[in-house]
Image 1: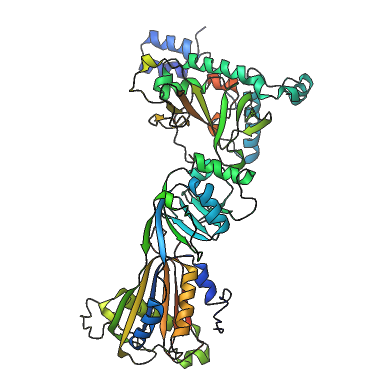
Image 2: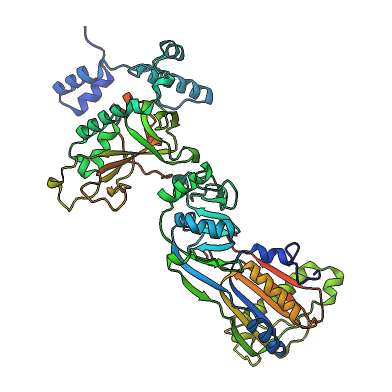
Length: 339
Length: 257
């Protein structure tokens, strides 16, 4: 992992690119050894302002209209997501000025906008769905221009139902007067949930050197998968990873993985943020954690996106820095079914 | 003098009395033509199938009345040309008014009730002079085209738009919405009626839906014009107007609607 400078924010290369790719994050979990809890609590929780987001009911036409459009879309930087599942309902999302609409066949045909097919190819007896995207920051996206007028025609006639949106403003200075207030938004603040001093049975977190020297990919995948499973159980607060767990093997066959090395009983702490969180915020959090913690301690950061498919699973990005290995990390990218 | 014994007659004699057997033979069997090349069994190979298809198509085309013009005749007669000075929307607005009167007369009471009966009458009705709007199409650029129909061909509508352009809109994969203004004597109507009804053609029976007039809500109910709105499914309308008059539309389940 390349060195991170405090002034310039990294965008290219891993691990930054997958983190930025996942634009809409729902839950962020940070798992650390308990010794760092006070340090992290002071630096990350008390010094940083908790992220704020709003829930508002608007139609798409109101977003493309008037002061809201000029202030937030043309000049500012916002993130918006409408309610629904991508494969079942019509979902709209707005990120960095790019409006993406996931429409079903009838709505797409009625809207008269050009789009691309979405989902599995081939008929299979199921009606295909469509994606339509517009870059609203383009200079040609103004009222009165032909392409934009087609979009407004569609918003007036076809996409004219009020939808529930989640809204997050990324610009550092709030707009004044705020065009959002006329739609009566509900404000939410994502205060972190703090869970110190969890007694767990921890596997060995360092990657075994034989795997690295021999370049043994399947073994590395096994090791990484087991580790990911353990971290997921810790994040869920499962009693199966607790230090004093003695459930009958008939009910649960889970064992903390000890192929790579012996398990230890230790204390970890967990910080969780839940809400409508931006990729920039997650990246900033990762940089702060890297800067705050001493370089020999391990930590794991994972960001889950909203579940927008029919199956209810979302995509996730998970990052682990093993102990005593500065500059090395493990990264998991889990994609949902319709990502 | 004696007729040779006929197998047919002996078969008939088994089932019927002698009088009815001879009557049936005389009326129904004796002068019936016997095809040497029957339509079934199906043609044995692809070549025969193509030949048969070509022959059937030629037969149906020769039966079309009025017979369609050949391309040369069409060009020479110039019947379908629309010169630039005649491509003005204002010229066809009186035709639109005429058409609205025609439709009100055609539908009569079904204007207020909608449903299958209205759909049956409209499917045989004339579309020249109607104001249509393309409302749904598999081709995105067609959506939103509005205007008066000046030509109702077999596969396309030629439409004059309010901006004085003639647009040729293929019917395939396209749905057209037509609105008819109702006569509105408010004192007879009362408050309980729907705003207007919507019928659909060539489709499985659906409950008539109320139309949305699209005017702003501040106008009062009596001043807002009430409309009868219906949608034409272009896929099912791929016939000339003359052919449509005699065609019986059956209700089918349509997968792509």
